[in-house]
Image (tube, rainbow, N blue to C red; front, top):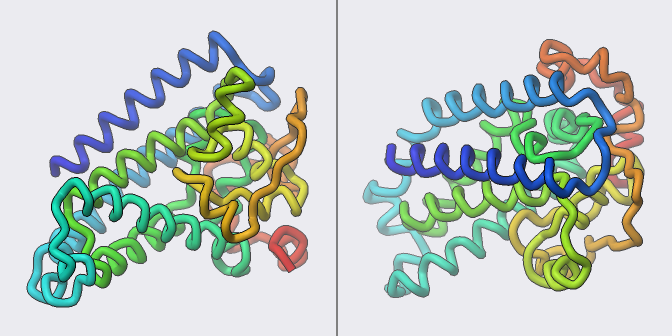
Length: 269
């Protein structure tokens, strides 16, 4: 329960804080109707938060505390102190998130879920909430499995979730960052400029820059893509360009109605 309140507080703080920065120093003018997008994106965020809390909180508690986890968890055998263990857990979970994100772009069935996130025709802090419920549930179940097998502590998991949420909001934010600071972030933490490339309709761009917190995974695993920023960027999926047809009902059904040709055109060969 404490973890849920912490995540909710981090979400609200990030949403309001970054929205203020977006209004004061935007990177680009809006490319799609804002009100409709925000209603859809925050609606997904609220629904997913409730569903994930109900479906996964009890499962996570059992996985983190039962005897099976205590004996199997690999990290627990190392007997690390809290100052070493928690940063290590955050880094490991960030790697898992990177690999999972990459899988959503490679496996056709997973892309059908993830395309809802990429269907957003603009990019701002609200985009960090736009995920199909099926994707959120699938990702949560996988993370619970990792918690058990690796032996992630409850504290490490909660801290990772809060940090991941803050980084997701930051990288989606429509904010302008000074060049020198942004250049430094490319080597450590995923900046908005890096994630904007990931959200363009071009397949080579979409299938790159998968990192959520750290950029190191894209550097090491060859998925980093960097090119000069576009002053008037385009976002979304090439086959889903009509904002009028991207309502909540269509988005909920999109994984089941997306044509096979569209899936093949979007995922990596």
